[in-house]
Length: 414
Image 1 (cartoon, rainbow, N blue to C red):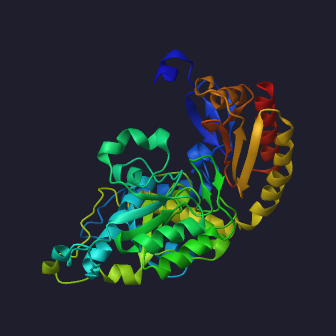
Image 2: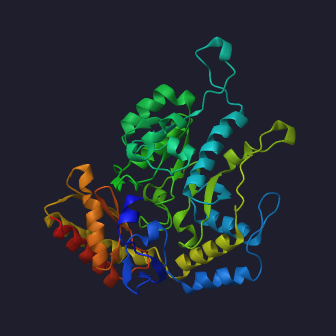
Image 3: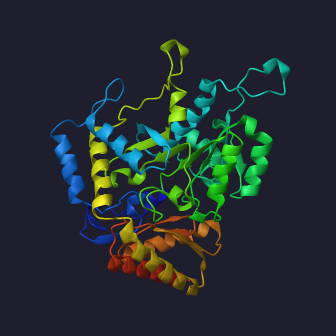
Protein backbone atom coordinates (compact mmCIF):
# COMPACT_ATOMS: atom_id res chain seq x y z
CA UNK A 1 0.00 0.00 0.00
CA UNK A 2 3.00 2.32 0.31
CA UNK A 3 2.95 2.99 -3.45
CA UNK A 4 -0.70 3.92 -3.27
CA UNK A 5 -0.25 6.26 -0.31
CA UNK A 6 2.93 8.02 -1.48
CA UNK A 7 2.29 8.35 -5.22
CA UNK A 8 -0.37 9.95 -7.37
CA UNK A 9 -2.70 7.29 -8.73
CA UNK A 10 -4.52 7.09 -12.04
CA UNK A 11 -8.27 6.82 -11.50
CA UNK A 12 -10.09 5.38 -14.52
CA UNK A 13 -13.46 6.91 -15.30
CA UNK A 14 -14.44 5.32 -18.62
CA UNK A 15 -13.24 3.20 -21.52
CA UNK A 16 -13.87 2.92 -25.22
CA UNK A 17 -12.41 0.35 -27.58
CA UNK A 18 -8.73 -0.15 -26.75
CA UNK A 19 -8.56 3.00 -24.62
CA UNK A 20 -9.03 3.92 -20.97
CA UNK A 21 -9.76 7.48 -19.80
CA UNK A 22 -8.87 8.84 -16.37
CA UNK A 23 -10.68 11.43 -14.27
CA UNK A 24 -8.47 14.17 -15.74
CA UNK A 25 -9.52 13.29 -19.28
CA UNK A 26 -6.19 11.72 -20.32
CA UNK A 27 -6.48 8.60 -22.46
CA UNK A 28 -4.31 5.50 -22.33
CA UNK A 29 -4.04 2.39 -24.47
CA UNK A 30 -5.12 -0.64 -22.44
CA UNK A 31 -2.01 -2.78 -22.98
CA UNK A 32 -3.02 -5.60 -20.62
CA UNK A 33 -6.76 -5.85 -21.35
CA UNK A 34 -7.58 -4.58 -17.85
CA UNK A 35 -5.70 -7.55 -16.38
CA UNK A 36 -6.14 -10.03 -19.22
CA UNK A 37 -9.95 -9.96 -19.43
CA UNK A 38 -11.12 -7.44 -22.06
CA UNK A 39 -11.53 -9.25 -25.36
CA UNK A 40 -13.46 -7.07 -27.83
CA UNK A 41 -12.66 -3.70 -26.26
CA UNK A 42 -14.49 -1.48 -23.81
CA UNK A 43 -18.11 -0.49 -24.39
CA UNK A 44 -18.68 -3.22 -26.96
CA UNK A 45 -22.19 -2.46 -28.17
CA UNK A 46 -23.39 -6.06 -28.47
CA UNK A 47 -22.35 -6.97 -24.92
CA UNK A 48 -23.76 -3.74 -23.51
CA UNK A 49 -27.09 -4.46 -25.16
CA UNK A 50 -27.16 -8.09 -24.01
CA UNK A 51 -26.72 -7.03 -20.38
CA UNK A 52 -29.39 -4.32 -20.69
CA UNK A 53 -31.81 -6.80 -22.26
CA UNK A 54 -31.23 -9.30 -19.46
CA UNK A 55 -31.73 -6.55 -16.88
CA UNK A 56 -35.24 -6.18 -18.24
CA UNK A 57 -35.91 -9.78 -17.18
CA UNK A 58 -33.92 -10.63 -14.04
CA UNK A 59 -30.48 -9.75 -12.69
CA UNK A 60 -29.92 -12.83 -10.54
CA UNK A 61 -31.47 -16.07 -9.43
CA UNK A 62 -29.72 -18.96 -7.70
CA UNK A 63 -28.66 -22.18 -9.40
CA UNK A 64 -29.05 -24.02 -6.10
CA UNK A 65 -32.13 -26.11 -6.85
CA UNK A 66 -33.13 -23.95 -9.83
CA UNK A 67 -31.94 -23.19 -13.34
CA UNK A 68 -31.94 -20.05 -15.48
CA UNK A 69 -32.09 -19.54 -19.23
CA UNK A 70 -28.77 -17.73 -19.84
CA UNK A 71 -26.81 -20.27 -17.76
CA UNK A 72 -28.31 -23.19 -19.71
CA UNK A 73 -27.57 -21.54 -23.05
CA UNK A 74 -24.02 -20.67 -22.00
CA UNK A 75 -23.31 -24.23 -20.86
CA UNK A 76 -24.47 -25.45 -24.28
CA UNK A 77 -22.21 -22.97 -26.09
CA UNK A 78 -19.18 -23.80 -23.96
CA UNK A 79 -19.57 -27.51 -24.67
CA UNK A 80 -19.66 -26.76 -28.42
CA UNK A 81 -16.31 -24.95 -28.41
CA UNK A 82 -14.49 -26.86 -25.65
CA UNK A 83 -12.01 -29.68 -26.35
CA UNK A 84 -13.72 -32.96 -27.18
CA UNK A 85 -15.23 -34.87 -24.27
CA UNK A 86 -15.84 -31.92 -21.93
CA UNK A 87 -19.61 -32.24 -21.73
CA UNK A 88 -20.51 -31.01 -18.25
CA UNK A 89 -20.25 -27.45 -16.86
CA UNK A 90 -20.05 -26.18 -13.28
CA UNK A 91 -20.30 -22.38 -12.96
CA UNK A 92 -18.56 -20.18 -10.40
CA UNK A 93 -17.24 -16.65 -10.03
CA UNK A 94 -13.56 -16.35 -11.01
CA UNK A 95 -10.40 -18.19 -11.97
CA UNK A 96 -9.42 -19.15 -8.44
CA UNK A 97 -12.82 -20.65 -7.70
CA UNK A 98 -12.84 -22.50 -11.03
CA UNK A 99 -9.55 -24.12 -9.96
CA UNK A 100 -10.78 -24.82 -6.41
CA UNK A 101 -13.74 -26.63 -7.92
CA UNK A 102 -11.51 -28.61 -10.28
CA UNK A 103 -9.29 -29.76 -7.41
CA UNK A 104 -12.25 -30.76 -5.24
CA UNK A 105 -13.92 -32.61 -8.12
CA UNK A 106 -10.69 -34.50 -8.85
CA UNK A 107 -10.23 -35.42 -5.21
CA UNK A 108 -13.84 -36.51 -4.70
CA UNK A 109 -13.94 -38.40 -8.01
CA UNK A 110 -11.58 -41.03 -6.65
CA UNK A 111 -13.50 -41.27 -3.40
CA UNK A 112 -16.83 -41.58 -5.17
CA UNK A 113 -15.48 -44.11 -7.65
CA UNK A 114 -14.30 -46.31 -4.79
CA UNK A 115 -11.05 -46.93 -6.64
CA UNK A 116 -8.85 -47.91 -3.76
CA UNK A 117 -5.10 -47.98 -3.98
CA UNK A 118 -3.00 -50.61 -2.23
CA UNK A 119 -1.28 -49.08 0.77
CA UNK A 120 2.13 -50.02 2.05
CA UNK A 121 0.49 -50.38 5.46
CA UNK A 122 -1.68 -53.55 5.57
CA UNK A 123 -4.03 -52.15 8.19
CA UNK A 124 -4.93 -49.27 5.84
CA UNK A 125 -5.57 -51.28 2.67
CA UNK A 126 -9.01 -49.79 2.07
CA UNK A 127 -7.96 -46.17 2.33
CA UNK A 128 -8.04 -44.07 -0.85
CA UNK A 129 -4.52 -42.74 -1.29
CA UNK A 130 -5.15 -40.71 -4.48
CA UNK A 131 -5.26 -37.46 -2.55
CA UNK A 132 -2.27 -35.49 -3.85
CA UNK A 133 -1.78 -33.15 -6.79
CA UNK A 134 1.10 -32.75 -9.22
CA UNK A 135 1.83 -29.23 -10.41
CA UNK A 136 4.58 -27.43 -12.30
CA UNK A 137 7.32 -25.22 -10.92
CA UNK A 138 6.46 -21.54 -11.37
CA UNK A 139 2.76 -22.42 -11.55
CA UNK A 140 0.05 -19.92 -10.72
CA UNK A 141 -3.57 -21.02 -10.39
CA UNK A 142 -5.13 -18.32 -8.20
CA UNK A 143 -5.07 -16.81 -4.73
CA UNK A 144 -7.54 -18.89 -2.71
CA UNK A 145 -6.04 -21.54 -0.42
CA UNK A 146 -6.70 -24.54 -2.64
CA UNK A 147 -5.31 -22.84 -5.73
CA UNK A 148 -2.33 -21.55 -3.74
CA UNK A 149 -1.66 -25.16 -2.71
CA UNK A 150 -0.92 -26.02 -6.36
CA UNK A 151 0.99 -22.80 -7.01
CA UNK A 152 4.73 -22.73 -7.53
CA UNK A 153 5.84 -19.10 -7.23
CA UNK A 154 7.57 -18.50 -3.91
CA UNK A 155 6.99 -14.73 -3.92
CA UNK A 156 3.22 -15.28 -4.05
CA UNK A 157 2.81 -18.56 -2.22
CA UNK A 158 5.63 -19.30 0.24
CA UNK A 159 4.24 -17.19 3.08
CA UNK A 160 1.09 -19.36 3.20
CA UNK A 161 3.05 -22.60 3.61
CA UNK A 162 1.52 -23.52 7.00
CA UNK A 163 -2.00 -23.15 5.58
CA UNK A 164 -1.75 -25.18 2.42
CA UNK A 165 -1.87 -28.77 1.27
CA UNK A 166 1.57 -29.49 -0.19
CA UNK A 167 1.57 -30.54 -3.84
CA UNK A 168 4.17 -32.58 -5.68
CA UNK A 169 6.12 -30.37 -8.05
CA UNK A 170 7.77 -31.04 -11.42
CA UNK A 171 9.66 -29.03 -14.00
CA UNK A 172 7.99 -28.66 -17.42
CA UNK A 173 9.93 -31.67 -18.64
CA UNK A 174 8.14 -34.81 -19.82
CA UNK A 175 10.85 -37.15 -18.54
CA UNK A 176 10.68 -35.66 -15.05
CA UNK A 177 6.88 -35.83 -15.05
CA UNK A 178 6.98 -39.50 -16.05
CA UNK A 179 9.56 -40.28 -13.38
CA UNK A 180 7.25 -38.82 -10.73
CA UNK A 181 4.09 -40.44 -12.08
CA UNK A 182 5.74 -43.83 -12.40
CA UNK A 183 6.79 -43.71 -8.77
CA UNK A 184 3.82 -41.93 -7.17
CA UNK A 185 0.76 -42.31 -9.43
CA UNK A 186 -1.03 -44.39 -6.79
CA UNK A 187 -1.24 -41.31 -4.56
CA UNK A 188 -1.79 -38.61 -7.22
CA UNK A 189 -5.39 -37.66 -7.95
CA UNK A 190 -4.63 -35.16 -10.72
CA UNK A 191 -1.97 -33.12 -12.45
CA UNK A 192 -2.75 -29.45 -13.06
CA UNK A 193 -1.08 -27.36 -15.77
CA UNK A 194 -1.38 -24.00 -17.46
CA UNK A 195 -1.32 -25.25 -21.06
CA UNK A 196 1.53 -24.04 -23.30
CA UNK A 197 2.49 -20.95 -21.30
CA UNK A 198 2.74 -19.99 -17.62
CA UNK A 199 1.31 -16.50 -17.43
CA UNK A 200 1.89 -15.07 -13.96
CA UNK A 201 5.37 -16.64 -13.88
CA UNK A 202 6.39 -14.18 -16.59
CA UNK A 203 5.04 -15.72 -19.79
CA UNK A 204 7.21 -18.85 -19.58
CA UNK A 205 6.79 -21.05 -22.66
CA UNK A 206 6.68 -24.83 -22.36
CA UNK A 207 8.70 -27.08 -24.68
CA UNK A 208 6.94 -28.11 -27.88
CA UNK A 209 5.15 -31.42 -27.36
CA UNK A 210 5.17 -31.16 -23.57
CA UNK A 211 1.41 -30.77 -23.19
CA UNK A 212 0.70 -33.71 -25.49
CA UNK A 213 3.20 -35.83 -23.56
CA UNK A 214 1.56 -34.89 -20.25
CA UNK A 215 -1.85 -35.94 -21.59
CA UNK A 216 -0.46 -39.36 -22.60
CA UNK A 217 1.31 -39.82 -19.28
CA UNK A 218 -1.76 -38.96 -17.21
CA UNK A 219 -3.78 -41.47 -19.21
CA UNK A 220 -1.08 -44.12 -18.87
CA UNK A 221 -0.78 -43.75 -15.10
CA UNK A 222 -4.51 -43.22 -14.37
CA UNK A 223 -4.14 -39.63 -13.18
CA UNK A 224 -6.67 -36.91 -14.07
CA UNK A 225 -5.41 -33.95 -16.11
CA UNK A 226 -6.65 -30.46 -15.19
CA UNK A 227 -5.93 -27.66 -17.68
CA UNK A 228 -6.14 -24.16 -16.26
CA UNK A 229 -7.22 -22.04 -19.24
CA UNK A 230 -8.18 -19.03 -17.12
CA UNK A 231 -5.48 -16.83 -18.68
CA UNK A 232 -4.97 -18.70 -21.95
CA UNK A 233 -8.58 -19.24 -22.98
CA UNK A 234 -10.72 -17.27 -25.40
CA UNK A 235 -8.17 -16.47 -28.07
CA UNK A 236 -5.21 -15.23 -26.06
CA UNK A 237 -2.78 -17.74 -27.57
CA UNK A 238 -4.16 -17.50 -31.11
CA UNK A 239 -6.52 -20.46 -30.58
CA UNK A 240 -9.81 -20.44 -28.71
CA UNK A 241 -8.12 -22.60 -26.06
CA UNK A 242 -4.42 -23.28 -25.64
CA UNK A 243 -5.10 -27.04 -25.55
CA UNK A 244 -5.82 -26.83 -29.27
CA UNK A 245 -2.16 -26.11 -30.07
CA UNK A 246 -1.32 -29.73 -29.32
CA UNK A 247 -4.72 -31.26 -29.95
CA UNK A 248 -5.38 -32.56 -26.45
CA UNK A 249 -8.47 -32.82 -24.25
CA UNK A 250 -8.06 -32.64 -20.48
CA UNK A 251 -10.32 -34.39 -17.99
CA UNK A 252 -11.15 -31.05 -16.36
CA UNK A 253 -10.76 -27.52 -17.74
CA UNK A 254 -11.03 -24.18 -15.95
CA UNK A 255 -12.08 -20.97 -17.71
CA UNK A 256 -12.76 -17.41 -16.52
CA UNK A 257 -11.19 -13.99 -17.39
CA UNK A 258 -12.18 -13.60 -21.07
CA UNK A 259 -15.38 -15.64 -20.71
CA UNK A 260 -17.62 -12.55 -20.47
CA UNK A 261 -15.43 -10.35 -22.66
CA UNK A 262 -14.15 -8.57 -19.56
CA UNK A 263 -17.54 -7.39 -18.33
CA UNK A 264 -18.61 -9.49 -15.33
CA UNK A 265 -17.06 -12.17 -13.09
CA UNK A 266 -18.17 -15.56 -14.37
CA UNK A 267 -16.09 -18.74 -14.41
CA UNK A 268 -16.69 -22.34 -15.36
CA UNK A 269 -15.15 -25.74 -14.67
CA UNK A 270 -15.80 -28.23 -17.46
CA UNK A 271 -15.44 -31.97 -17.12
CA UNK A 272 -16.26 -35.29 -18.76
CA UNK A 273 -19.27 -37.57 -18.55
CA UNK A 274 -17.11 -40.18 -16.82
CA UNK A 275 -16.25 -37.81 -13.97
CA UNK A 276 -19.79 -36.45 -13.79
CA UNK A 277 -21.22 -39.97 -13.52
CA UNK A 278 -19.07 -40.67 -10.46
CA UNK A 279 -21.16 -38.08 -8.61
CA UNK A 280 -24.49 -39.70 -9.47
CA UNK A 281 -26.21 -41.90 -6.92
CA UNK A 282 -29.00 -42.01 -4.34
CA UNK A 283 -28.97 -39.23 -1.77
CA UNK A 284 -27.83 -41.57 1.00
CA UNK A 285 -24.70 -42.47 -1.00
CA UNK A 286 -23.39 -38.95 -0.20
CA UNK A 287 -21.80 -38.59 -3.62
CA UNK A 288 -23.09 -35.03 -3.91
CA UNK A 289 -20.56 -32.35 -4.83
CA UNK A 290 -21.26 -29.99 -1.94
CA UNK A 291 -19.95 -26.77 -3.44
CA UNK A 292 -22.10 -23.71 -4.06
CA UNK A 293 -21.58 -20.05 -4.90
CA UNK A 294 -24.23 -17.41 -4.35
CA UNK A 295 -23.72 -15.93 -7.82
CA UNK A 296 -23.10 -19.22 -9.66
CA UNK A 297 -24.55 -18.96 -13.17
CA UNK A 298 -25.54 -15.31 -12.66
CA UNK A 299 -27.94 -14.43 -15.52
CA UNK A 300 -26.34 -11.03 -16.24
CA UNK A 301 -22.85 -12.52 -16.44
CA UNK A 302 -24.04 -15.44 -18.57
CA UNK A 303 -25.84 -13.03 -20.93
CA UNK A 304 -22.57 -11.10 -21.34
CA UNK A 305 -20.69 -14.35 -21.99
CA UNK A 306 -23.20 -15.45 -24.63
CA UNK A 307 -22.84 -12.11 -26.42
CA UNK A 308 -19.05 -12.43 -26.17
CA UNK A 309 -19.05 -15.87 -27.82
CA UNK A 310 -21.44 -14.66 -30.52
CA UNK A 311 -18.99 -11.87 -31.38
CA UNK A 312 -16.18 -14.43 -31.72
CA UNK A 313 -18.24 -16.20 -34.38
CA UNK A 314 -19.68 -13.15 -36.12
CA UNK A 315 -16.46 -11.12 -36.32
CA UNK A 316 -14.17 -14.13 -36.88
CA UNK A 317 -12.03 -12.90 -33.99
CA UNK A 318 -9.58 -15.82 -33.96
CA UNK A 319 -8.95 -15.65 -37.72
CA UNK A 320 -8.34 -11.89 -37.56
CA UNK A 321 -5.57 -12.39 -34.99
CA UNK A 322 -3.13 -13.86 -37.52
CA UNK A 323 -1.74 -10.56 -38.91
CA UNK A 324 -1.53 -9.12 -35.38
CA UNK A 325 0.41 -12.14 -34.14
CA UNK A 326 2.77 -11.89 -37.14
CA UNK A 327 3.32 -8.19 -36.44
CA UNK A 328 4.21 -9.00 -32.84
CA UNK A 329 6.64 -11.71 -33.94
CA UNK A 330 8.38 -9.27 -36.28
CA UNK A 331 8.47 -6.16 -34.09
CA UNK A 332 9.40 -7.92 -30.85
CA UNK A 333 12.76 -8.96 -32.35
CA UNK A 334 13.80 -5.30 -32.24
CA UNK A 335 13.57 -5.32 -28.44
CA UNK A 336 16.81 -7.33 -28.31
CA UNK A 337 18.56 -4.12 -29.43
CA UNK A 338 17.85 -2.66 -25.97
CA UNK A 339 20.78 -3.40 -23.62
CA UNK A 340 18.61 -4.28 -20.61
CA UNK A 341 16.36 -6.76 -22.46
CA UNK A 342 17.26 -10.34 -21.58
CA UNK A 343 14.61 -12.39 -23.40
CA UNK A 344 11.34 -11.91 -25.29
CA UNK A 345 8.65 -14.61 -25.09
CA UNK A 346 5.43 -14.76 -27.08
CA UNK A 347 2.52 -17.07 -27.74
CA UNK A 348 -0.23 -15.53 -29.81
CA UNK A 349 -1.24 -12.25 -28.16
CA UNK A 350 0.56 -13.04 -24.89
CA UNK A 351 3.97 -11.36 -24.56
CA UNK A 352 6.60 -11.22 -21.82
CA UNK A 353 9.69 -9.02 -22.19
CA UNK A 354 12.18 -10.06 -19.53
CA UNK A 355 14.79 -7.53 -18.44
CA UNK A 356 18.27 -8.37 -17.22
CA UNK A 357 18.68 -9.12 -13.53
CA UNK A 358 18.56 -6.08 -11.28
CA UNK A 359 18.52 -6.00 -7.48
CA UNK A 360 15.00 -6.71 -6.21
CA UNK A 361 14.69 -3.27 -4.64
CA UNK A 362 15.49 -1.54 -7.96
CA UNK A 363 11.98 -2.35 -9.26
CA UNK A 364 13.03 -1.78 -12.84
CA UNK A 365 9.81 -3.33 -14.17
CA UNK A 366 7.75 -0.89 -12.12
CA UNK A 367 9.80 2.04 -13.42
CA UNK A 368 9.18 0.91 -17.00
CA UNK A 369 5.41 0.91 -16.57
CA UNK A 370 5.51 4.39 -15.01
CA UNK A 371 7.39 5.60 -18.09
CA UNK A 372 4.77 3.95 -20.28
CA UNK A 373 1.99 5.76 -18.44
CA UNK A 374 3.59 9.12 -19.22
CA UNK A 375 3.42 8.15 -22.88
CA UNK A 376 -0.21 6.99 -22.75
CA UNK A 377 -0.01 3.23 -22.17
CA UNK A 378 -1.25 1.15 -19.24
CA UNK A 379 0.77 -2.04 -18.71
CA UNK A 380 1.79 -4.05 -15.64
CA UNK A 381 4.99 -5.92 -14.88
CA UNK A 382 5.48 -9.36 -13.40
CA UNK A 383 8.60 -8.54 -11.42
CA UNK A 384 11.06 -7.50 -14.12
CA UNK A 385 9.03 -9.01 -16.95
CA UNK A 386 7.04 -6.46 -18.91
CA UNK A 387 3.73 -7.99 -19.98
CA UNK A 388 1.78 -7.08 -23.09
CA UNK A 389 -1.68 -8.58 -23.59
CA UNK A 390 -3.91 -6.09 -25.42
CA UNK A 391 -7.58 -6.68 -26.28
CA UNK A 392 -7.94 -9.08 -29.20
CA UNK A 393 -9.81 -6.31 -31.02
CA UNK A 394 -6.77 -4.00 -30.97
CA UNK A 395 -6.07 -2.50 -34.39
CA UNK A 396 -2.73 -2.86 -36.19
CA UNK A 397 -2.17 0.88 -35.70
CA UNK A 398 -2.88 0.64 -31.97
CA UNK A 399 -0.68 -2.43 -31.65
CA UNK A 400 2.22 -0.60 -33.29
CA UNK A 401 1.74 2.28 -30.85
CA UNK A 402 1.74 -0.13 -27.89
CA UNK A 403 5.01 -1.65 -29.10
CA UNK A 404 6.61 1.76 -29.73
CA UNK A 405 5.70 3.12 -26.30
CA UNK A 406 6.90 -0.09 -24.61
CA UNK A 407 10.19 0.00 -26.55
CA UNK A 408 10.81 3.68 -25.73
CA UNK A 409 9.89 3.19 -22.06
CA UNK A 410 12.37 0.31 -21.63
CA UNK A 411 15.06 2.02 -23.69
CA UNK A 412 14.81 5.19 -21.60
CA UNK A 413 15.89 3.17 -18.54
CA UNK A 414 18.78 1.38 -20.28
